[in-house]
Length: 240
Image (tube, rainbow, N blue to C red; front, side, top):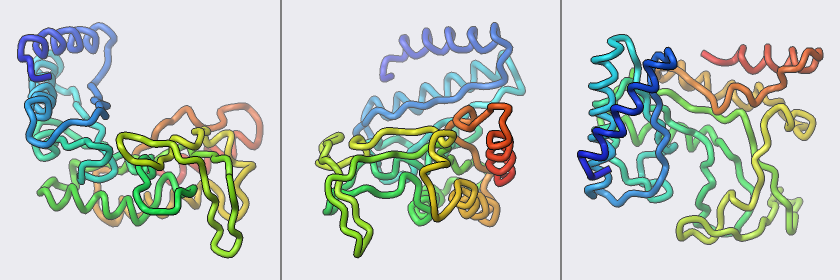
């Protein structure tokens, strides 16, 4: 990304692809670690800027969005130029999920994939950088993690999981397996999936964010069964 010639070639290819396929925009979902203030970090910002300029020249109504971690605090080593990314895109899609990609404190146990408190704190880190709410979209998971419980402590409902390292952290959600929401409904007892998302979409509305989105829309039950119809109506019904 630090190579301007390589960036120009890549941008030209992507813009041509968008135009040829009749798309209306482009989404960046780059999640590799980058050192702060590094040539690669600046190169990523330049890449977003250059693609947006080229895309708007070809399609004036096109939109460019950038997926970012649930927090701007260098999650998983992603020390990006978030202010620059926001300035050179239309939206930042704040992925308020995979929040347990690195579990630094003990014990190594199963924890929420998407916690409201984490989501709120994460949005605040972007706001603290001066990024306007109108550019922030709260990204929500339409999937969850299923873990193998090594040892369970009922008194505090703690489930110890296997220690699987991720980017230098000894414990992570890599010990679990992702399951689409269409496969999880029968596993949940105390709260249904709609309730798990409603508090976050309510927060997005009250905070005046640009909206809320999901990864991914096709993770629901789209069968012709009454159960599938019920899940679709409920899940889409809580989106802003």
